[in-house]
Amino acid sequence: MEHEDQEGAGEAAPAASTPTTGAPASSANPANPANMADVARVAGVSIATVSRALRDVPGVGDSTRERVREVAEQLSYVISPEASSLSRRETGRVAVVMPRIDVWFYSTMLSGLERALRAEGIDVLVYQVDGPAERGAFVRDLPARRKVDAVILAALPLSPEQRDRLDLLGVPMVIAGGQARGLPHVDVDDRAMARAAVERLVAAGHRDIAMVRTSDTDATTWDADLLRVAGYREALAAAGLEARPELLVTETYGVDAGTRAVERLLAVDRPPTAVFGYSDEIAAAVSVGARRHGLSVPDDLSVIGVDGHPMSELFGLSTMDQNVERQAEEAAGIAVRLIRGEPGTRSVRVRHRFVDRGSVQPPRPQD
Image (cartoon, rainbow, N blue to C red; front, side, top):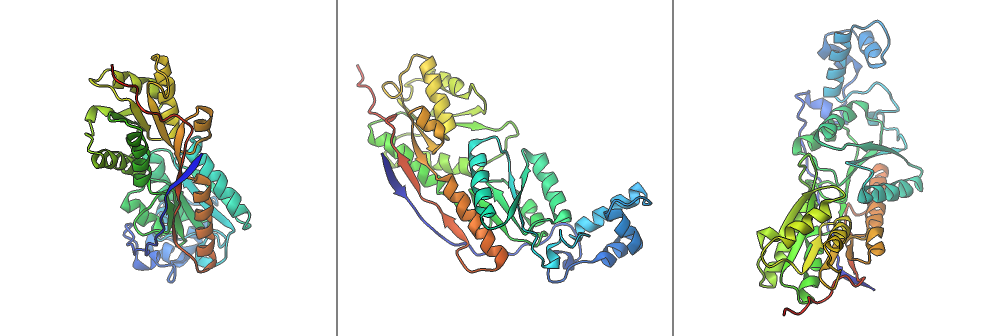
């Protein structure tokens, strides 16, 4: 059984940004691009040396080659006409940047993006940047290569400085699965989605409701995580229920996270009768952990997740489906329109829906 819970749409105006490299103003302006002579002048070498250094031709010392590359990066100069968006020739490629491709959300997003872009005759370059160091390296390197017509950032946490650096690409950027300071984007309302999930538990009669989430080992902060926690707390407050700190459990991501979370929840005074899982994977892990402790889902513990992951169907878990495939299609469509200069919406909020699989039931009567 499927129920629509919420939808919305809005548009965000693009925000201007300032390059952070200390390069001349022309380097950040695609209408007034740097050229090889500019690189030679700033690096203090000849144009021929710049050409050899950037093409990795022998005859240039290592220190000189490195200096030329640093200046080229600062000026956002690339030697290949094909790779440079300043040449105004479309490359027929879009970069998709995501933290991981082995997690369901990202693999599903990537599949949807690739399928939609391929239908438009556009190839996809995939960049996996798992962790702060990899994200930093990507942001440093991509502007100097500039091999694409657009960049799609899939729920990628970036600092304002990193965003400014990506602006030096001079190509459209689109956020898929989130928002970032005025960029075109596609998302779901994570706060409303979490609130709706907890409201389902409240409506079933639960009063002691836990939330289980996981954290990355690199302590990355994700916007969706903060918004879903806020939605959880808002739903409890609206029902006049206390957001008990001991019922908001965070475990390091891993196969035993659900078991560890259940152990912690069972150890508190007045254990929960229901759990909201930050994702379907977490909800499934909690379900397994509950059964390992002799609890039945949903007779002893109601569980609900978020995502629409196939795992939720396998485990018989109710979920808030965020329609990742639709998010991918919309993000690809925005990128294509921006590349081609076509009119159309620049931001989309995809509707989520409740999928009822019976894992939310009233709590057992207290003896």
